[in-house]
Structure formats: C-alpha cells, structure tokens
Picture 1: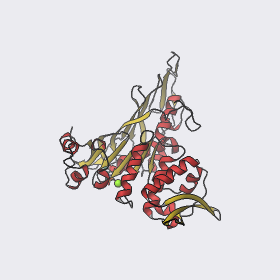
Picture 2: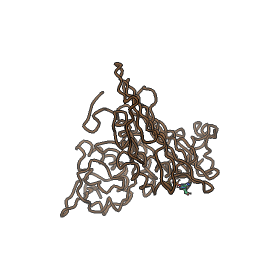
Picture 3: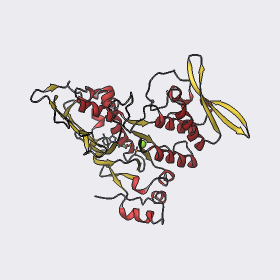
Picture 4: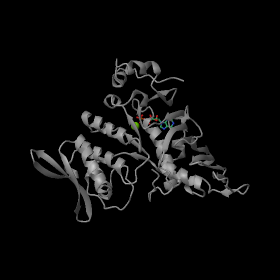
Amino acid sequence: MAMTSPSDPFRIQQGLKYLRLHITNFLSYQSAVLDLADLVALVGPNATGKSNAVAAIKLLREIPIHGLPIAIARRGGFDQLRHRSSGRPYNPALRLDFQFDNEPISYYELKLRGLEGKRYEVKQERGSIFLRGDRYTFINKGGELTYNEKEEGGAVHTNGDRKIPVPVGQSAVSFPATFGIYIVTRILQLMQTVEINPALVGELQEPSSTREFEPDGSNAASMFEELNSETRSELVDELAAIVPGIRRIELRRLADKVTLAFVQEVSQGKRREFLAKQMSDGTLRAFSILLSMLQENRPALLVIEEPEIAIHLGALRTLVDIFRQQSESTQVLITTHSADIVDTIDIDALRVVWTEDGASRIAPVAEHTREPVRQGLITPGQLLRSDSLDPELS
Ligand SMILES: Nc1ncnc2c1ncn2[C@@H]1O[C@H](COP(=O)(O)OP(=O)(O)O)[C@@H](O)[C@H]1O
Ligand SMILES: [Mg+2]
C-alpha cells in the first residue's frame, strides 16, 4: 500500500525501522549501543542512565526543529552534555542506524568537538541513506558540506568539489539543502518523547492549531479535537479498557480556553460527566499516552519514560498490549524500573542499563538468564526483583 499523505509526501515513514542508537561520550555514556525493535524497554535502577539515553534521542529530534545550538542549550549546554569521568571531558558523538524495508542499512552520525571555554564545533556529520533503490550521502566536515545523490536510473546529483558552507556551530540537518538531508530531518523528527504532566492535561488549555503533540500533554484537548471520529472512538475504547466506565470524551470551551469532558458510567446506566481537572492523574496520563500514539501525524518512534507512574498494574498491562498492537507502525521505547512492567515485556525486548567504572552501559539480558524465562521457570520481573536480571557482557 503505497499511499502518500500531506504530512509524509515522500513516504519516508513507510517501511521505516529505527535499528539502533550509538551513544559516545554523551552524558553518563562513554560508549554504548541501544538496539531498538518494535517494543523495547530500558530497565535499570535509578541514576544508571535511562533518561540520558532518552536525552540523546531528544537532542537528535530537536536539531532540525530548533537548530543545533538551541538543541544543545536545552540539554544544559555543551559542557554539561559531554561525558565526564575523573573530571576529564570527552568529545560526544551520536549515530542513529535505520532502515527502509529491505534496503541496506542507513545511518546519520554527528560528532562534536570541544573548543576553548565551553564552546564546541561540529567535527564531522554524515549521512548515508538507502531509500527505494536510490542512495543519498552527505558529509559535513569542518563546516563544509559535500553530497552525492544517486538515482536508480543512473542520474547522479553531486556538488563535486564545490563545498557548500554550513554556518559555524550548526548542523547541516538544520538546513536541508539536499534530499538526503531532508530525509534525515524527517527521521529525526519522527522520534517523539512523551513526558506527561497530568496537572497540565487537567488545566484549561489554550486552543492550539498545532498538529504536533506537546510532550507534557499541554495541548491534549486540541489534539484530541483534531482526531477523526474513527480514531477518537478507538482512543475512547482503549482508554475504557484501562479506566472502566469511560464512554465518551468531548471538547468543552470555557471562555477562551478549552478542556476535555470525560463521560463515565458511574453505576448501571447512570452517566456523569467529569472535566479533565477532576480525573485522576493516572487516567490523564494513560489518556495522553494513547493520544500521543494515535495523533494524526503519528510518530515513527515513541519514547515513554516510566509509564508506571500513577497507573495501576491492570491498566499497565493493557497499555503495554496497546503499545504492542501499534508497534508495527509506531515503534515504542519505554524506560522503567517497575518489575510489573518488565513482566509484560518479552525477555528479548529488555535492555539492561547499569553503571560500570563511572559510565553507563546498555545490553540485552544475558542468554543464561533468558533460558529459564523461556522455560517458564521464572519471570523477568522476578529476576529484576531479586537483582539477577544480568546483562549480556560482551
Ligand atoms: N556529563 C556527564 N558525565 C558523566 N555522568 C553524567 C553526566 N551527566 C549526568 N551524568 C550522570 O547521569 C546520572 C543520571 O542518569 P539518568 O539517565 O538521569 O538516570 P535514570 O536511569 O534514573 O534515568 C547522574 O547520576 C549523573 O551522575
Ligand atoms: Mg530517569
């Protein structure tokens, strides 16, 4: 089914899979690889580096949106962002591998270098993309961009020896001068992070015409209103599986603000309407997570930090089931330290995060630990509770 949509005119979202993220000298990471899949959970105790891996994804996403300097400033500045151990700062690098259908593996890589006085420069930035039989490459070295785009028919577009300048401290990805770079900007922006603030979902909201879900849920009412009626009832059904009794959700306008009304069956056949403000934090979180997943312009990768917050066990199971159902079109990455969540996830989809010699590490669960789980002798959650969810050491 090769359909184009206004939000995805070049069908970049179709057949796209994020494969892995290489994190080098970034925050608590020295060198780590996060393998992605349709549904993956980063599991580990507090302060091991789960959120720092998410921060790497946020940085990448924000480069095309805000430009590199602002994306870095939003993470606390270059000096905070580079890995430090024994006081020594290192040069950070991120690389994202992805793939379209059965094409060869594509990647985008960004390497930064520290300069005097907390400043930085782009040391090297490159991309190599295989899309529908064509290959697109670009390289930005020291602020000079070279590109090559080779079409299947044989036509080659290149700037040859003529270098295209990239502004100092900026990324080529903030200025999509070529189709290959444009593809990367889409790939990066199609990764979205959700950090719901139930208080903001409950408050009266400014009506917004934005088409993109705010990570804190602060435009949830307008986003819900923009869904088509089919998706709206899908969302209501899914929420009802998590919060029994939910029958309808509607937009309410109060003065110049908007909010949502939840129609709930309180006893046999008796319905009552509650404004978002009156709903529980758990309901507002579950609702907003579902909304982020079903929004009109669906992300290709949705990152959800600690979905267990304020959501009870039965609801969590349902939520993870929904993630799994949607994961064919939207890959999901969650962070968690909940044994209950871990029990709902396939042992092969767990990624253990731990700290070793002052640096964060990520690895799948060790094979010797997976086997008893496959045989049904123990659950992943039991392993986590007894501190024996061992990582595969390479
Ligand atoms: N630039 C840095 N270099 C080394 N370690 C860092 C850096 N920035 C943050 N950290 C470490 O990362 C830890 C927090 O990791 P985080 O990803 O937030 O943990 P969690 O697994 O709980 O989400 C902090 O304890 C801090 O020591
Ligand atoms: Mg965290």
